[in-house]
Image 1: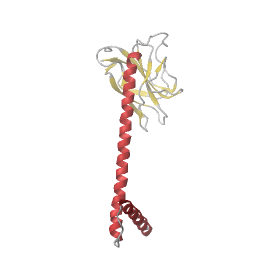
Image 2: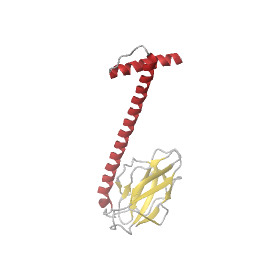
Image 3: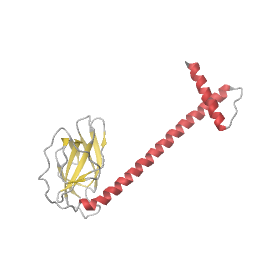
Length: 203
């Protein structure tokens, strides 16, 4: 088996050298070692370039999401209260918001963490400015295998314009209808699991 592996590796080495414009000589071990180095170097370079491309794509997506939410914030904070459903729905299942805790203050961008029964298909966080009729679906949380999740959520506009305003926050797991990030709903979504609502105040 090892001999077959060496033959295959040498064939790859010769092919790589041919591509590079080099002609094999009699010392096959030299070409085997050199070809192996070339092969490993090519594989490593491909992995590096793939990782860099994935990083650039992820950063580009994050910038697009940031622009989307920044554009939506003024609209969300001005939606008429209208016929807002009374209060937050009763919790179901085991999903919880761990941080921030109820009745604390938050920044315009605040990390929200929690846990839910695993396995889960998806978790979504919904933020409701209390004096509006907007129920705002936040960015997609990072979800771990053990059911822990986290998301950097939006609470009003930057600066002092929304300081002192109150927000209700509910996390849902496996919603009945797909919830796209950035969507503004007219009420709390139905879901298999729904956390208790917490109330936070903007700094």
